[in-house]
Length: 299
Image (cartoon, helix red, strand yellow):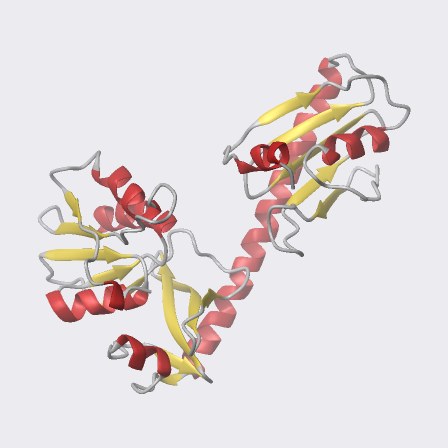
């Protein structure tokens, strides 16, 4: 992947739409679309101009990600995009802007979004069912599990499935996913399940005067043992702001929130502190944030 391709795929536009103007007339929409995709490093696709949505791998993600998509609503126009960036583009066989073709492309893109949303909701429901089954069948976590021993932490309500520790992830009061912690410390949620806005809890919110939010489970458990206050596990920096907002809506006004962000000072843009500051900057009297100082307990 060259520098230009990285730049094209590096953005995080939520809903961008552009019309690609061809440098010359193409004889088929398949040719026009293949050339447009090549600019994003996607090559060798057999294009099907059948009006259906087709998926392909984005080159900036692992093989099998299927984050890219395209649809040819007619033999004159095509639309393609990438789910993980939110961007979408249209291309036509002529070099001229055709309002009718552009409208057709926008409609096709909307259909693609609706289909993607339906597929995601169905998969999340299936994964939530799997998570509830695993959680019900799992036993209490073994305090001598290698991960807990290494971190010098108690299980704090975790359960265990085989050699995997299970961290329950809740959203809107329902169990929607599980984060699996393997003996070597690797952590993965169940594939296809909801992760944005989903969180876990160590301790009890009822009657609390102060609630902390941390990224990883180990950090949260160490904070709980040290401070005695309930700690919400957001899982990662990207989830901090969403979890903090929802927690603020749920808690009484008198309950303070502290975001204990990971201090990722050796990572570009220090995502933990940056995300915490993003939430805190608009609520300086309502929320505080502090990076953990002991790296041994961090996930």
